[in-house]
Length: 228
Image (cartoon, rainbow, N blue to C red):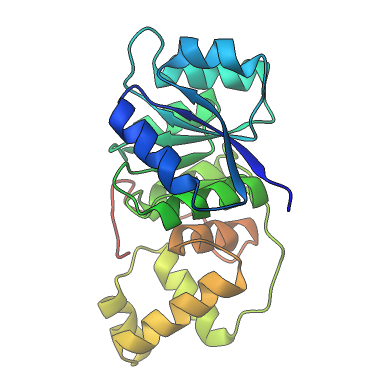
């Protein structure tokens, strides 16, 4: 099995070592760099370049913003996953511009972190579900991100639901508009995620935009959270 080479760049030792211990439970993951800030990472990366960097933003000496720019300039093929509690459009745009590929919360389960690692390698991007669908659509329509997806067959009902999801409709709103129950909506959403090889519903939204299944709409609320 070919392992995925990872770097963890995080100044909080307890969190860094905890994440390292959890990732060791996955034999396909190989943490080759454990750094406490950007400068520490810069010294180590010269000896062993990872495929994916899991990067905190608030660090002494050289923070995550500077480190993201450095990685993008020196190692543009390396994928960067940002650990953050922020989800504003301006914040996300700023980091994507610097070269970020993914966004995670520090309290995410290890399975979601592993999903994010696979997603940035397979499609180029991963967004946690707290980031609004409108922000992700805006990034794609403005060509700020270009994820890779294989086109798959979706049923007419799945296409209807995916379009409503992209328009920030909640499960209750979708159920009401299509005269179905919310459990059926959830079932269809799970099928869409599986079919499109997405890791969450945000990935399915990216698939929809990538395959021209939705149009850019000026009335979309850029700060809307929608239903996850």
